[in-house]
Length: 461
Image (cartoon, rainbow, N blue to C red; front, side, top):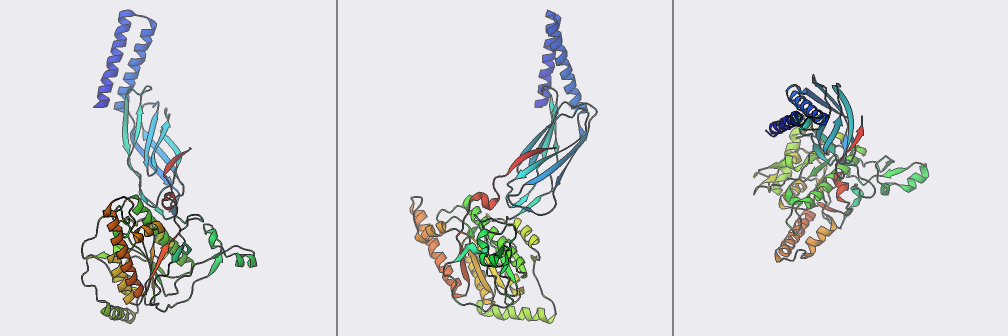
């Protein structure tokens, strides 16, 4: 409707200029009237015989895309139009923002150009519907059509760096989890290997490097077990702001640290050639009220394992991270659940009951909650060695532990004290079961976890 009104206004302008020429005469009035009439006629023709069958194809490089990397996109555009076009604007709604490309087609009907998307965060990103605009020389008469989006692009967690890495050595034990230690089985992992691009400099084994003349990387102490299960806890109760009750940006940052920590352990397990499974707690949630009691858990699990061994098969429930690429791609889909869990809802235990005996379990979360503690107690009762990596930084833990009032209200103070008391109680329960609690000490900026601020750079044709 707006374009129709604009066309009427331009036609009235042409009529007025024509009337001015017939009334006053003169070459200037004739020139203005002629130009306005031609522009109006061209605009009407564009609306009737404008571009049709516009097809846009985007080509991205093959392979895995890591958070923070630049993605070069090559765009191929073609269309059909019987009229020469003075200008064309392609507005591509990319994951990094809207990219605008001005073209001067004339009689050309096929173009190719490129742009780069920088700073994409971990996750799944997609191109939304865009638009292609065209019109007359003055822009009096403009028209547009929509262009299709693109298939989602999966961006996996980054590799970290020396300044803000989440490699396993930056997780430190604060004397927790020194209770019952179950004996480990299996062959120890590789202790050192040759330096690879992306390894943190604080992991270089200088003595070995000096002896051999080549840089060697020191690998962290891998659990000496038959296999390794890594789980990222996705429930909002594990990442809520301590004392503030907020789940916005701060909670998301804590969650991203947990995801990046899990990604680093997946890489280390792959380097050590240890069988590794990756779990997301969102796949584990189930309203199961029949979770066996602790005293019966070990017996039931041993019964299930005996049945599997008798059949000569190894049962694996769900998707298994048989390669680092598969596991990292799955981590790209991890998300922080914003809704609160239902009362009585528990984490499923099917995977625990099918996990090989002697396996180790690593859980990454921001803080403990009742649902996760019950699940860990059940895992410990089955004879697995469990470790919990808390990605909430020292300042948050200090606020929770000291019960300091940050916002000047007694409600915040009471909430901090209650949360600190619960955390202490949960920690003591897990330690008594042999579960090890590990805290993260190295904390980077927001951009280092998410990949930075997304943007677009035009690289020309």
